[in-house]
Image (cartoon, rainbow, N blue to C red; front, side):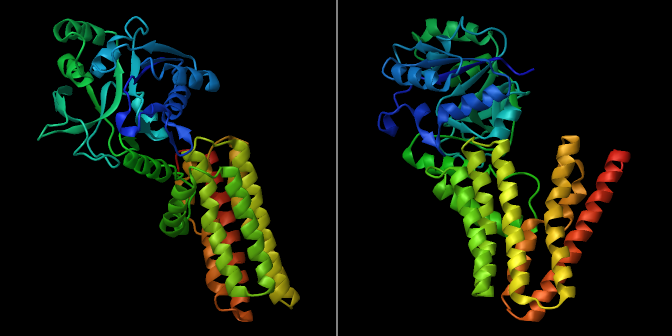
Length: 432
């Protein structure tokens, strides 16, 4: 069971960030603290205790009121002391298990989903997004923290700044308060307590201590925002390599809805360009397919995902594909037989997505997660768009006919196989 309370340490003066409270710095369009609190709230946290200093208290209070978080502020009158003292000030405000996090750490959704189920220090043996030379390292012995600090030459993992603790930690901080006159680090407290270590390796997290760290955090949030299932071969190996870099440039200033509109308009323009130049139309169509991934990446990185956004985006994609293929048939085909083949290609293109979305509507489950074989079937939108561009680079009637015939066969065979695999899954759940 996930803890229901979280303590957030935010008493630092942020001297390396120009004197700004690091928890309120925006990364990918959201305050760092908003990200942590919103994701923890999704996973059962109902109360937040924020330890800050008197200088930043008004800013954090305004932030809490603006976002309606169930939070209580505790003022640390001596922020120059070690952050272990800040933790000690939260005693009496928590009971049972609780989450402890730092206000300047940025976490991905996947990281927090797993971390809240851990115990003790959440440690990373394969950190991808931090400078290990500057990071706090951990030595683990018999599953517990043995040594912790930045200067360790030999270490087993890196401290992620995320802890699952209980009230017993305050017995340790109470002793350190007496011994050190309140000036001791969180690392000292955790080492003395010998808390357990839970390894969560390679997921998205980083800390923000300098302006340069902001760029790394932004990159991490976008790269970890790529959806896990549903992408076709072209998206995985080409489109995402480009779209994520575009998203990194736009994530601070462009909303997902704005990007959806831009992508839709570009798709319509690509269809109209068929009346002028087929190769250029194919290239613009492929470009719109690349940009089609950006709105989703922005939404996930900015924590702005919504069912309505995904619904609208899916419908607009169908309009783009339908208008493109209809205009292509209108500008190039003459014989009735080929109009029929073009119609089959158009219907099949629409039904590829409908066949999986209808499964979700009927069974409230993701078809790609339920039937993993669907991920390997060719014919998804990114693959069809890329194939269309390739055929149109050679603008002859025979290449257009070959395209329509290929799409007609590819899409309708895929739909038939999708229906078959789903029927087997529903009738015999353990067979696929």
